Image (cartoon, rainbow, N blue to C red; front, side, top):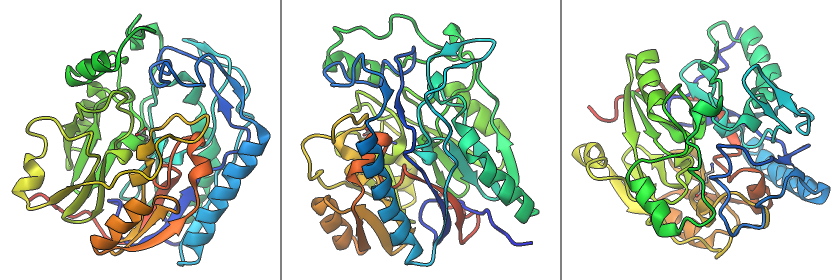
Amino acid sequence: MAKIVNSWNDWDPLKRVIVGRCDNSMIPPEEPATSEKVPVDSEMRGMWGLRPLATVERGNECLENLVKAVEDRGVVVDRPTPLQWNQAIGTPDFRNDSMMTCMPPRDILLTIGNEIMASANSFRCRYFEYLAYWPLMKQYFDEDPEFKWTQAPRPRLTDASYKHNYYDEKITLEERLVRTANKDFVTTEVEPMWDAADVMRMGKDLFIQHGLTTNRTAMEWFQRYYPELRVHAMNFPGDPYPIHIDATFVPLRPGLIINNPHRHPAEGQLAIFEANDWEVVDAAQPAHDEPPALCYSSVWLSMNCLVLDPKTVIVEASEVHQQEQMDKLGMNVVPVDLRDAYPFGGGLHCSTADVYREGGCEDYFP
Ligand code: DAV
């Protein structure tokens, strides 16, 4: 029996990782939580159904590039088992005409020490996505006697979980920014809701983005579930669509974070980093003016990198400015062509979930 699951942060030497799959991916129908995520001028508005097969095949090719790059460096790779995501789903509380995908795993699985917890996502279309990872969770459970296989409290996602008429076709970018600044998001506080990609793990500290996908009740829940850890809420007032912390505030190694220059933390939230002599530098500009077609995320997936160890980082192959900056910051850069996987939910960090990194639970903010 071996130790299979262990990870406390995003930079210790990576030994085992889950990489998502694009098979059967859907553009989900609109629902109370997701109408917020699709910009009004996006070509994806009002469109739903299976993603075109050629894009699925190309997305999978990109993920294979990532698999090969990490396997070449001795990392063990596990893959989820996709479901037929086009099936309609229902619970006693809601119905939805389809599911979405098993990309990206980072949104669904949160690894803290020897525990992997499936999240409490606010999108109805993602309610059953965890099932794609259950075969792996069972395998880890059988092979690692210390592995804790956990599911966060399942949200009900009734209409009470969302603000109604929050979404309005006519809302301007400025009005969106005012909402972000006022911490006024589409989700209510009737139950904990969170995406794992909103949680930045730093040993004894969890920094959790409060935004469209994660609410304050989730943070209170985390603090009670992990009394030995410290939970910090983070807000990024410059982000009109605050979803997931990993294209906004990204640690490369202890003491160094790259920060999206349009999304600086709210007043007072940098203090803990400054007090502990962390360097927070603005990330380089993305190499692209637009995300690829049918993509939910912004061009800032440029900074959504996968750190292999405190000196080595995988950066998307076309993101030349980000690569150059990483190099100047003293990192060895491994470029991987992944851009055509972006439409399936994200970049290099998003496309993965940690299973094993060396190292334990350190206190970086004593
Ligand atoms: O900038 O669109 C994307 C994060 C995906 N996990 C953005 C955030």
